[in-house]
Structure formats: C-alpha cells, structure tokens
Image (cartoon, rainbow, N blue to C red; front, side, top):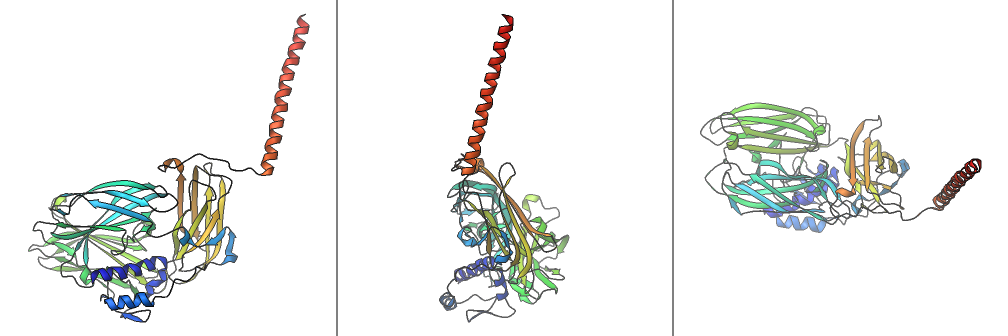
Length: 495
C-alpha cells in the first residue's frame, strides 16, 4: 500500500511543480479528484488509484497564457519542448547493504544529462531518512540529516560525470532501515530531478540497514505534525489555509531516554523552499530541555500568511556535554499553501543547445498560485564574450500559474564559445522579483568542440570587407611607391 501511495503522491507533487495552483486540492476534510473522494491522512485504495488513472483527462495541447500584446521582443513558446523534469538521472550506489553505527558510507556512480544542452552549476543533494516501524499514514519516515553530494557540476549535453562521496553515519545512529533520497537542482532554484522540498518526489534512492542496538533518542515526531487544525502529511498533499490569517505549525520534540535531554532548536520559515538565502523570512534559535521519557511541543506561527507557499524547516541537535561525533540530529520540513497569493518566479532559464548555431534561450515563468498576476516585466539578455548584447526577449504583461516560455533567438550565422544569459523579473513598480545570471563557457564543458566558425556572410559584410581590402592594398602600394620615390631623389642628389 505504501508503494501505491508513493506513486500517487509523486504524480500529484510533480503536478504541483508544473501547475502550482494545484495546491488548492488540499482542503480541510477531503479532496475530490476527478470525482473520487480522497481523505488526507489516509492512503488511497488500489481501486481509487485505478479510478484516478482512468478518469484523468488527456493532456490538452499547449496554449500560452501570456498576452502576446505584451511581447516587445522575442516570441512565446512551450517550455516543455526544452525543459523536461527528470532529464537528469542520478545513478549512485552504496558500497555495502548494511552498516553499523559509526561506519563510513561510500557512495559512487554517475550523473547523466539526457538533455540536448549542457547544464552548469548543478547540485546533487541527499536526504537521510529512517523508516518508522509501525508508522501511521501521516509519516512513513523521519528525517535525520541533509547534505550535499556534489555541487558546481557541469554536465555535458547527452553526457555524464562521475561522482564519489563518503558519509559518516555517526555513532548514535539508531538501528533500522534507512533510505538516502537524492535530488538535482540548478543555480539553487531550478528543479531538475526530484523536489528537494518533498520526501516522496526524488530523483533516486538507495536503501540500507543499520545494525546495533541504538534506539531513537530525541526526535521530531512527524506522525503528529499539525498545521492549524489539519494533519501534515510528509508524503502527500499540502494543507491549504486562508490567506492573511495566522498559520500555526506544531510538532512534538520527543525524548525516548530515561534522562532529560538538552537540544538546540533552529527554526527557519521560507517562502517557496529553502534553497536561497533571500527566501528566508524568519529564523530563530533556542535551547530546549526535554524531560526524561517526555516531550515538548514545538510551535511556530506565520502571523499573516500572505504568500502562496511557505516552508518551515526545523532542526534539533543534541547539546550539552555530548561529544560532537555522538550528537544526534532530527529534522522536519513542513510545507503548506494558502488560497491566495501572488509570487511569480522563474521555473527555468537556459539555452536549447550550446555550443552550436540556431540556438534559442528560453525563459520559463509562472506564478506560484493559480491567480493571474498583472504588470510583470520579464527581460532576458544574451551577451557574447565581449559583453555585447546579441539577443534579447522582453515581455510586459500577465503571468498565470501555468508555466509559459518567452524565447530569444540567437543570430543564426555564428556559434559562440562564451555566452552569458541575464534574466530579470520585476513588478509594475520596478521592484526586482527574481533574477538569475547563467554563464556558458565552452572550454568548461567536457568533450565540447569549441571552435568558433563563421558560417555565412551577408552581402553587405562582403562588400564592406572587399572595399576595406582594396583600400589596404592602395595604401600599401602608395607607401611602397612613396618610399621608392624618396630613395631615387636622395640617390640623384648624391650623384
């Protein structure tokens, strides 16, 4: 049943990244999906899954929801022809199927790029989770750690890179079954494979066991997380709440030992996700003492929830006289939506092929809720290695929850070794909402052919070049004649 639930939730959450307004499905009591009633907190039955798959309407033909009258330069297009979620494949394996507390886990494998263009500044992240024995439907796992496998990767088009990483399991690791979940993203913002804010939409995972006799000591109990009066499901639907009202997150920090435990709790509230520091709205740190075999209820409140998506990140680490190598960490990531909000953003920005000719730069935009946002300016510039602008797209108009593309065409008669894409999104007042700079350097891409070739010349350039060559020949000839003449005059005077 859990595998079925994983499959359904994966489909739903991928839908949320493509059509963010889908978060309104998560209501207080039940969800009606294609006429089939689902209850948050309860896994759908096999029959319900079959009904959903059968009842889901066919994918409609793409139609841009951007206003063509707002297009000043460039063209409108379908981003799905270039950006395909999941086209970066993570193939990693651990060095053994079982470990003991304090062991070093060895990870190795390849990161494959199935796209027709290179990807730079790619990060591969991992989340270490432990399966919960006898779990309820609210949470199947508990999060122990999050860390980076590799960063600043440059993936060649239709190519791969090798990756190796070791991870210290820690001597306090409790026994049981574990999973390492992997995610790939670019420029700390663009989801390539897996959703780093979700526990069930991942690019790849490995499963292993940890032996020994350690038990959970202190942990954030995700099986009892509440957002206002709704259960938070860390493998399922987001809860949705009224905008411009307080939203309170509650989760127990539980102590399973016979002694009181001191913990340092760090709480962070983000807009959308936790990848970029500028999305951090509030951060708090406090020391907490938990009684033996007791718990403390952790509460964090967004006083006026006016954004479409919030992400609350809680991390508790043992403190006191415990050596650093023996400390135990517990993490909980809680994401919820509101029924209103306007926060447009870039979904992806990049070039469809590089190096090469006939390239196009796609700027993919959407609002993070289903609402229409007016008077949004989106400008994308493409600069050559000398900083000269060679292409540009400019749009000023509405943006919806659908992912739409704005395209800038590069000159068709040249290929380039170096390009820089600068994309900026601003509102009607000129305030920058989102921006990203993406450099492309051919010499940094493994296996790329970096010769710049002029493929064709316009008649005007041919004429100008010919005139220039004739002038050079005349000047050189005149110079030679002048030198020879001066020489003959001097020779005649000497005689």
